[in-house]
Image (cartoon, rainbow, N blue to C red; front, side, top):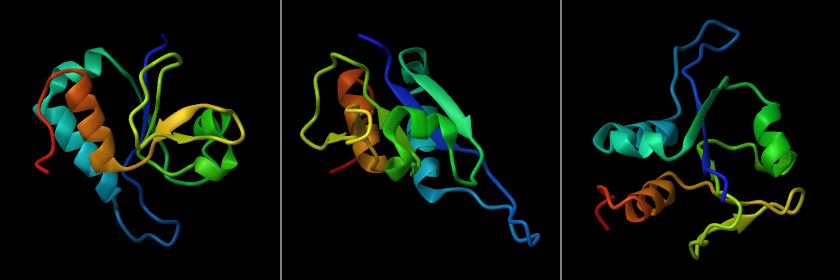
Length: 115
């Protein structure tokens, strides 16, 4: 089974000088990773710039699934009920911050979001 790959956005400033900004959903996942740093050893984390297109995500999931954060599930892994499937690449993924944290917390027996 390949590793799960987590795509996250880096902070950015808009072309008109507004910002800096961060993605609130990516912040939730970063918080989870701060509480459970050992998870970083089990997954690949790729930080991306904010503007679209996001070529690495497009290659993994197609142009229709460029939102972040997104966890591309490793091939052959057990799929959670909330997994979505890319029609472009047939890869499975999670694109909900709380769902990503809950999945990783369950999988690696670490902290999880309160229900």
